[in-house]
Image (cartoon, rainbow, N blue to C red; front, side):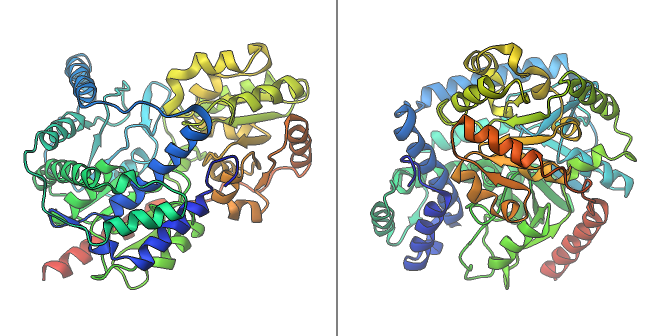
Length: 509
């Protein structure tokens, strides 16, 4: 461990030991094979706990009363939104060919509208092929107006959560050698609160309730195929389960970094019946790298990866007439002109890290090198409420830009920057698709983007601001790379629908 924070490989090695030694694939709650849910939630929970212990101390848990209050407040905002923004509600027919479930966060504003970055381009392609689509959006965050009218699902998810909380009797559980699994993780230096019996039963009850909600909606909609952004939240797992129980093939849409260090995509143990019930049938990935990681474990299973490219990239091609995209690109060029002779360094921040991990080192770098570089700082979507706190922490606001780089779409910035700097953002991948090289400031990021480092698209520098500025100069001298990568998006979508339809037909017969 470095600085008290485990590397991704240490988490993955601990999971591999548990899966090799113990019958975790036999764990059932209410008849559901829950290990995928436990696996992913364990790693993210332990990473968060380790980070808090090392940096900011433990945070208080959220009480049931607080959660209920948040749900009630969200329901009120949803009711108000439904009245004030009725045009953004999908009032079309119930039956659709495709259902898209957003993660609620992957929106960017282009011109007058908010675009769901990964769903909307595919919805447009589906429409061009004569297929109807429904966009379902979670969370109590309402961005208006929308490019595609949607149906909000968060109220139904909240009602399902309350039903699970009020459930009197726990679901029947079969969890062989659960205590031994906790011991294995403890010997590896980790906690095991996610494997506590009460926690597994609580999560499974909520999984079951949310899946029942989604299944009822799917049975009314009867789509040929379902796609979702970020399947590995509890609600995402529930959607996958609902699709499987409804006989609807389901696809996870890549939305960020995957690779061999991500517990939702890498090194799954071989399922006994060729299928992990909580994992999608298909993984829509951006490149051969992600497909290879999935293929290493999915051989002889019902799961597979399809390289369809990044749907959001097609919005920014010259041949794509998305309203507002040209104006956004122009704004990016105008922003570049304001930097004068200085090369532009786009800094993409990651959420959930203490200021000592990225904000404070960045402040020192800006103070040291703002005369040589123009620093554009971009907040992660989850960090938008922290805008003023970040601005204050970074020092003199005349030495960096924060608002425009945060508010403009990322792809409107990438053509105009010279370098990308980050703790561990998946912008490393997107920057490379625009020929822009990245500098990573942590070993954590280096593990996530090892192929990018091997290919020369990313470079690691964990030193102080003097060393980091020197590395920026060195990488800048390498120049830009190739042009924007082409995408097989439309042909991949049609092929995927045909495969899913054929599979469903075979299963029914």
